[in-house]
Amino acid sequence: MTSVEVSLKTLLTEADGALGAAVVDYTSGMALGTLGGGKDLDLSVAAAGNTDLIRAKARTMETLGMKDKIEDILVTLGSQYHLIRPVTGRAGNGLFIYLVIDKSRSNLAMARHLLKRTEEQMEV
Image (cartoon, rainbow, N blue to C red; front, side, top):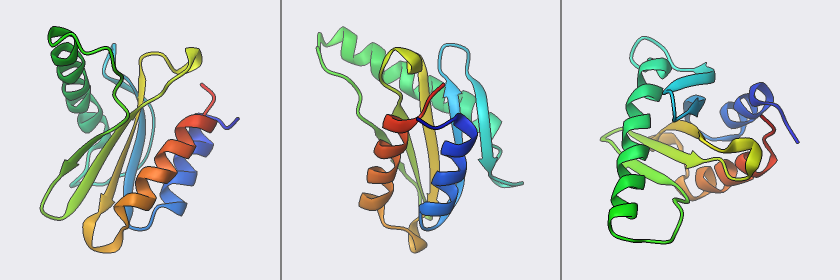
């Protein structure tokens, strides 16, 4: 099991084209940890905004009566991929991992695989 800090470092070093990562509590919208980002990518603001996205999807699934879970959410921008993965297990209830990667320098399938592995190994 790895800590939030180690998990974020792993994502930024192992994901090709990684620009930033965060672990977020989607009940409050607060980031428990962030790494990377910059003037064009404020991870605290992104954490709060993506909280709304994950809540909206969960409400929609509930309204539709879907008895499934969100594996991950992908937002594709012109130059970036934004990946959101809820943390499963009792220790991660209400948390998600957020990863931003540069489209031109990344492999989306590998980033999703790394995000899944990180989520499974993270200890909160």
